[in-house]
Image (cartoon, rainbow over all chains, first blue to last red; front, side):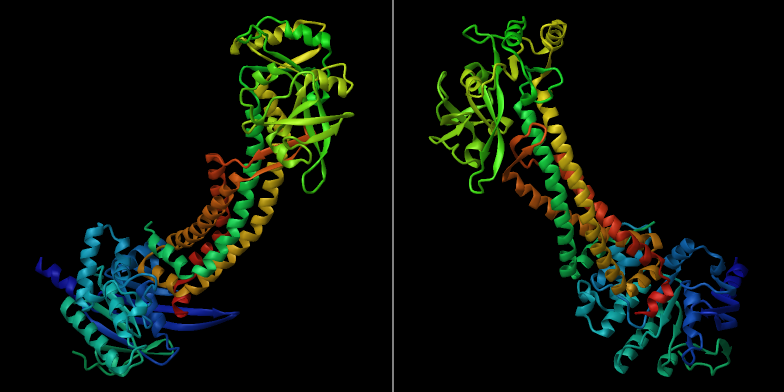
Length: 240
Length: 389
């Protein structure tokens, strides 16, 4: 029993091997990722960094299951998601991944609470259970009083907090964040990063974040650098 | 498959309310045309069917088809009128009316454009056979005089046929002494006078039709067998309801085919309009589509969401068009029934079946206009969508 638990704890949540992805532009094939190997432990917070075009967003998209690799494996909690069919992959994302985007990507016609509720509509929950989950997710990002506000009535920072609540509400193992502070001023960005770090510590979520911002990267436990589609060793993050 | 919530669909239409309203209005116009045509065709049918009574029988010369084509001699009329099985009234008179029917070209009020009006020679019995016909003003014509009564829509629509007016036809001056209300039947579009006077004026030796009432409503087949068996007659008997239904068939069918063809042609415009609106909606919401898909909504859910939006749009158009078309029920129009070559007044008639057909037509337009944009939305790649955020 104990041994089993240790083994589970030791196995990385994300195990990427020989991952490659190329884009075709006309007759040209442009390699974006070339033979990437990467392990991310459970409850780890990593930052993917690298110059534009280095392939960091592509890697994030592949980990999140919204893009398909041309070769290699992406095992997440033991499931090779590269092998999943499109529908299965959608269901897998609904159950296992929370998304945080640079521009928040809230649906403007839905209130904050309705936006947070959206991923729960894909889970077999009653209306009442959904509302309970939404309330606790909004409480976690300290936006209970803004539940009925629409995105255009919220500041950028508040909108990103709603997006974080939406990412958390299904209690996924993995949260992917693409430049989560990229559209925010420095102070607000710092608040969002503090919130992410806090959620990571308190809830033990595995977070994979793409960022340009060294300050944001500094919040992560580990930095992964990409250059021209290949991982390069970077300095260890200061982290928490 | 879990669906995108309907509130998202409906609120997106509200957000783009001007575009949505204009698109829906385009559809409403087509729906309006579609519905009014069906209502017109139904109105003609209802009017002519209301003209018949369930226990009345119309007798025409074999193969005549319409009253004006039919010739029935006095001898034949006498034989038919003496057949057993014809009802009698309280005074013991047989309820059979031999009637000459002629067409008379009269100018319309206002435009002065001539149109054919059915002139019927009848009698007190004739009136008794049509209980739906009532005098609304004036009095009935007197037997043996050049007095006539005019159906309501003829009195209103034609010059010189108003109460108290005189008009000239068949070489005589005729005075309009009463106005009839045919209760929404074809008699609203007729002029009635004394049968014998009409025969003389039109120089007829024969009647056009015999109408009689069956003593027993179920006795029609027996009566027809009697008539068919008599070699002197050469006439055919039809239940009055079927006779009038057949009179309406060609015109009603013509109008509904013409109207449907026109509606379908117009609908292409409305469908293209809906398609443009929905393509714009997809283009505007690419990032939202990417977000929904990333969260875990399947392609099918996106397809259904956009299709639902198009259907909602067309339903709104359908309801507006249908509401506008229902207002047409207060309008009474008249046209020439080319089967009888005479003027026929009728009302646009709405029925639950027409309402259902109209809404189905509207939804079909929405489906046709919405499918390609919705399909495109569902086929977009998540990564491409999110890149456009």
